[in-house]
Length: 208
Ligand code: GAR
Image (cartoon, helix red, strand yellow):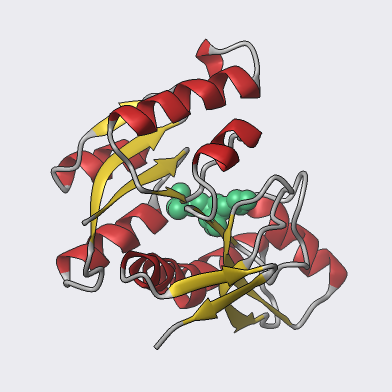
């Protein structure tokens, strides 16, 4: 069984999509073993509690630097014998210590079609503000492996979503969550847990 930790910072709707997929039996070979939040009191921890999943806090505020926090996170993940780390709306910078502890075993969901609207400063609602400012007609979501480059790791799955007349950042964010993020994140996690992802350079091959 692949032991999965989901790292969260906020509302946790992507975590909920993973919990629901697990309940429907759509993540064979995997088990959400822990939810770890970057601050106390976030609603994602309540979702974990309701699903009977152990919740933990490794608070950014308790550490001097992103590096110190990452080292503490890695220790926690190791203690919990985690095999796959899923960043689901995790808004804290993680450093290379995490990437080298979990090579090609950290998945992130990003609310745009990478390489558009990604990298430093592109997170949460800002991504959708930038997409609307630019005037794109199509956006979407990407699930990728995490590498040392911010939002630059090998792409696992992407799904496009149309921008519509009158969209606000909030409306576009919600549509991208419903139509793309909540669909491709559980799917990518399931593929990983079934051993169906093979990384070759920048390309992720999906095995039959
Ligand atoms: C999601 O839209 C996720 O893609 C985004 O934050 C939101 C979290 O929502 N992540 C990033 O922007 C990371 N760069 P959630 O807490 O309801 O899952």
